[in-house]
Structures are given as structure tokens and as C-alpha cells.
Amino acid sequence: MMAEKFVNSAINLQLSIELAAIIKWLSPEFPAMER
Image (cartoon, rainbow, N blue to C red; front, side, top):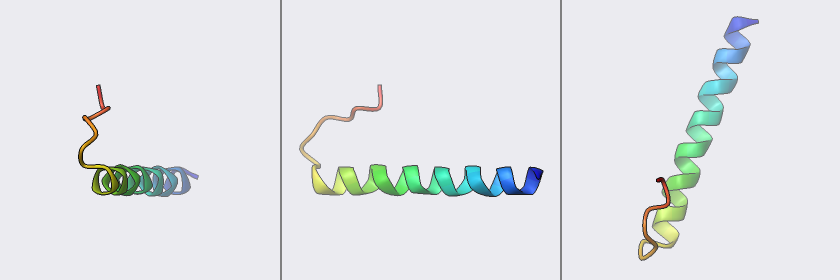
């Protein structure tokens, strides 16, 4: 059970990082929207 949750969290984190990287690559002129 714990392992599954850990794997799901790791996958979600990786997808979030990749999505952010893709957005920054597609629109580098946009200001950072992190904060």
C-alpha cells in the first residue's frame, strides 16, 4: 500500500516537472507563474 502511494506520488511529481518544462520551452517569453 505505502509503496503504491509512493510510486504514484513520484509519477505525479515527474509529470508535473515535465509539464512545467514543456510550458517553459513552448513559451519562454512568459513570466514565471510559480509565485
